[in-house]
Image 1 (cartoon, rainbow, N blue to C red):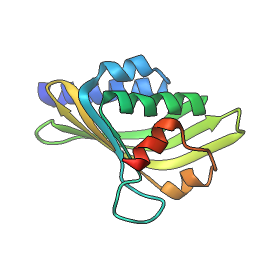
Image 2: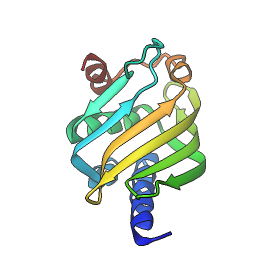
Image 3: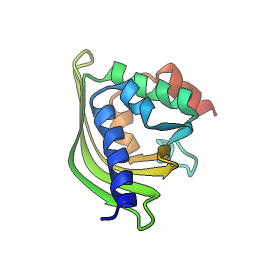
Image 4: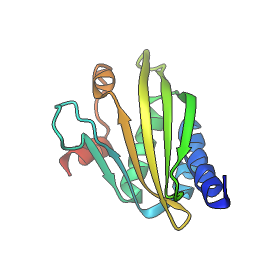
Length: 150
């Protein structure tokens, strides 16, 4: 693994460590101002994304909503793959997420694609089974509602 690959991997690992640690400041530190998180698999089964969080402020709204909804966010059995040119990192993992207040355990299978430019994360694609999340019955946060309307 060369320096470009190692830098990309380290950046993606820092993002996921902060996400799992429910550490919004840690997530924000690795994001480009134009960062975007897209959740492309829709509960409606259409080709349009379910959620699009566009720009650092909107992305941070999503990150804050996850931290508020869930007491534990863990991605288990992580397998990272760095693209040949080092511009993308993929993570395959099993989610083990808990909401004590709602008495919910949320488990899903994830594939993330993290796109990197100039040493910052510019885009995250979050692929997971939308039915597993929708079945929790958790109301959308303000940020999530806005991401659907856009």
